[in-house]
Image 1 (tube, rainbow, N blue to C red):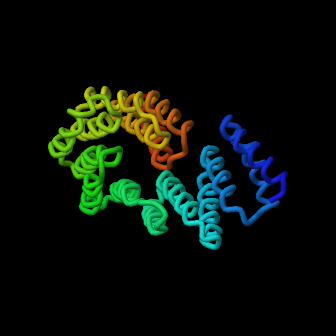
Image 2: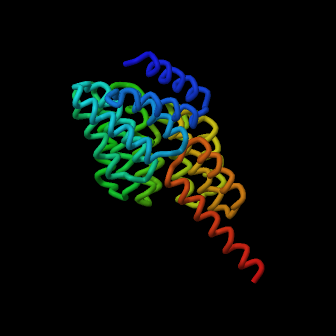
Image 3: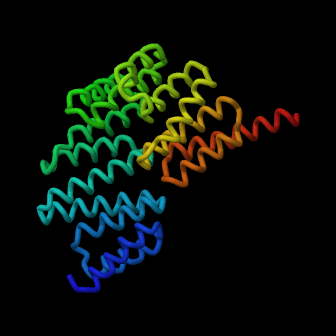
Length: 277
C-alpha cells in the first residue's frame, strides 16, 4: 500500500480517538479509494461510523471487511468484523441478524467466541420475547471460567424472569452475584427492571440511578440510562425521562432507546391534552 494510504489511516485513527468522527470517516474513505482490498481499514471506518451514530454504514463496512478477510484467509479480522456487526445489529434492534452474526463470528475458529456468542444471543432472544430459549442460552454463560460472562449470567437470567413477570425468581437469581459484587452495574440494572415490573418505583429509581452512574461500556451504559428513562416514564416524570433518553442517545445510537423516546413524547402530549381538556 502507498505511503498516503498509511498516513490517511493513521490520521483517521487519531481523529476518531479525538471524537472527530466525521473527519475520521473522510480520511478512511480516501484511504479506501487507494486500497480497496484492505480489510482492516474497513473496520476502522466501521468503528467511526458507529461512533457517529451511523449504524447501517458501520454494519456494511464490517460485512465487507469480513468478506475481504475470507478471501485473504484472515480469520482473526473476519471474527472481529462479524463480532462488531453483531453488536451494531443488536443496537439497531435487528436481533435475528445479531444472532446470525455472532454465530458466524464463532465459526471462524480463530478465537473462542462461545461466551461472546451466548451473551449476545441471550440478550437478543430476550428482546425477541423467546424467554425459554433465552434462559437456556443465558445459563450456558455460567459454565465458563471466572470473568465478566460468568458473573453476568445471573443478571441476564434475572431480567429474563422479570420479562416473564416472575419477579420473585428475578430477585432470587441475583443472590449469588449480589453478595459478591455489591455495587456492580448489572446487579443494579437487573434489580431496577424487577422493581419496575413490581411497580416499586422508588426502589426502581434508586437501582436504575446506581446502574447508570456505574456503567462503563458504551452499549451497557446506554441500556442503563434507557431503563432509568423507563422508570421516570412510569413515574410520569416526562421531562426527566426525555433527558435520560437524550443522554443515552448521545452516547450511542440504540433503536430501543429511540423508540422509548418517541413513546415518552406521545405520553407527554396525551398528559397535556388531559390537563387542558
